[in-house]
Length: 106
Image (tube, rainbow, N blue to C red):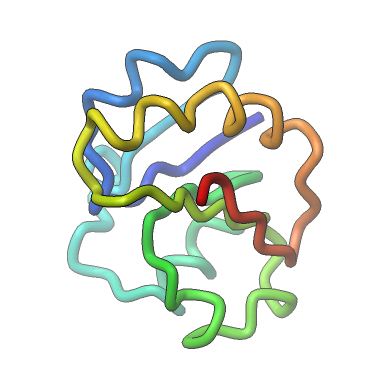
């Protein structure tokens, strides 16, 4: 699957993501683009958007986009708190559907 990694997630966590083609918003040159426009752009080239933005599903009409959104939910956005979510994230990525939001973690 093609995965877009939100810029608000520590890029070092990408070292633990295997079996998928992953790009960061920064690598795509999309750092200044806001959520609605970002999801529209991402939907043209990616299958899944991974973020820690818990409010995204309230701010955007996710079903209008042809991309799945996965929200990582941890105590903080620190690498040490996000890393334990990787196995669950890897399990969910192949099963997510476009236009849906999946939350991984507490």
